Length: 379
Ligand SMILES: Cc1ncc(COP(=O)(O)O)c(C=O)c1O
Image (tube, rainbow, N blue to C red; front, top):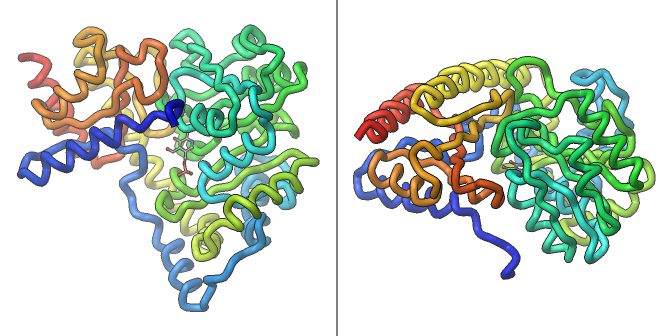
C-alpha cells in the first residue's frame, strides 16, 4: 500500500464541502466528471430494465446486444469494422484498465506511460507487481508519448506502452501519424499498446483517432462515463486483440463476474440518435466553456502552451504565481473560493508548477471563478 497514493483532489473536494457547509461559496473546477445528468433515454431504458427484473448476472463478457452496439459504433464513428466478439463490457474504464494490464503484465515487467497522466494507471501497474515507467512529457510533444520517446525508454523488461488521447490532465490529443508511429514502435519491440480512449467524443475540432484505426493489436479502453455521462453507472468497455478473449474472460469471471446488468441495459439506449443528439449538444457546450476558460486563464498569466483539444481539462502552468501548486491550491480554495486540482495528482514531473482546471461546471460559475481568480491574483 506504500506504493499507492491517495488522490489529492479528494482532499480538496472534502475541504471545499466543509467550507460550503460553513456557508462559504466555492466554484468547483476540480471535479473530473461531467456536470450533466445522464441523458433521459438512457435513464428510461435503465428504469425499464429494473421494472422488467433485469437484475441477474449477464455473461462475463457482457450483454451480446450491447457488445454488438459498441462494435457497430466503431463502424459509425470511425468507419472501421470491429467484431463484437472482441468487445468486453467492463465496470468502467477502470475495470478495462485492470483487465488489460492484468492479462499483459508479469511481475517485474514495465509499462511506459506519460507523466503527467492519469494516476490510477501507475497504481494498477503497482498493484499487479509491475513497474510503471513515468516518461516525462512536456509541451514540445503536446504532453503525450511519441514513437521516439517509446523507443528511448523501452527496455528489456518493458511489456507495454499506455497512452490516453485526449489526455487527463492535459486535454491534448495524439495525431494519426504519431499514433501510427507509436503503434509501430511498440509492435516492433514485441510489446503491447494500450490506448485509453475514455475522452473520445469530447473533442473540439477534428475527431480523435482510435488506436484501432492504426492497429489490430492494441487494447482499446473506453467508457460510458464521460461522453455518455454515466459516471455513476460504472460501465465501460475493452476491445481486445484476437487471441486474448479467453484470457480476459477468465479474469472478468474471477474479478467481477460481469458488469452491472441494469447499467448494461440502460447503455443500449446510449447509441440511439435521440441520445447522440443530446450528447452532441452538450459537447458543443463543453467547447463553449473551453473557449471561454482557456483565453481567460492565459490572460490571467497562467501558461497553457498547447491548446487542449478534448476532455474537459486545462493543465495550466502557475509558476508565475507559485512553484508549490499544492500550497497554491489550498490558498485558492481558502482565500479565493476556487477549487482546482494540483499537478501532483498526475505525476512528479514539474508537477509543482501545474494546476488542472476542469470546466465541468456551468458557464456562469466559470465566469465567477475567473473573476475570483482575477481579484485574488491582483492582490
Ligand atoms: C484517463 C482516464 N481513464 C480512466 C478513467 C476511469 O473512468 P471510469 O472508470 O469512470 O470509466 C478516468 C476517470 O477520470 C480517466 O480520466
